[in-house]
Length: 65
Image: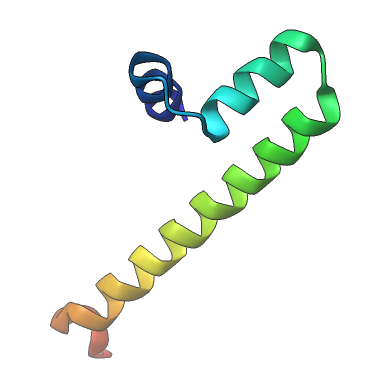
């Protein structure tokens, strides 16, 4: 999240990071909570997909002892 905020601030891109920062600064708690949940769910899906990809592509993890 910090990387998104940094890139959006430096290059002036509108995005989720800027929306999150502005909603926290203005006290718009429901928007900040929704973005935190959305970003947490996206991270959970990405980590799960990476774990599945490693399990499918690593031969020693596919064989049972």
